[in-house]
Length: 115
Image 1 (cartoon, rainbow, N blue to C red):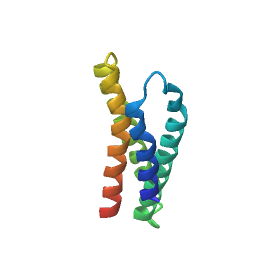
Image 2: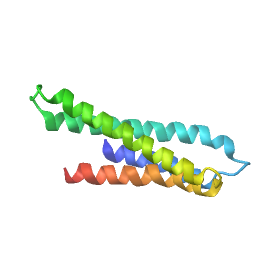
Image 3: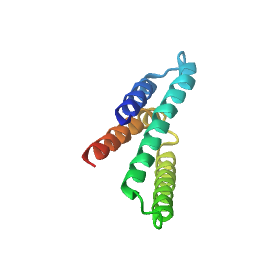
């Protein structure tokens, strides 16, 4: 499943770097596909955490809470950082929107494969 999410995310993210005024309506289906790929990746990661926890129900809430907290904080910090630095530079934002999900998906796949 993780490989499918990487392929869907990459397929949807890379064309975003080449969006122009004439093709700006293509953003909506591409972002929807990107969201599907990221949702599959998130569900797979949660499933992997469930496999690690196993039958230890005493600590499962703590593990899921830490995972959720880290995910929310890291996303918020990165979004704040990138938007504050590149809010005036459309080219840089276009490259970030197209490359970051792909790079993160590949990194996630690598970590899942190692684990």
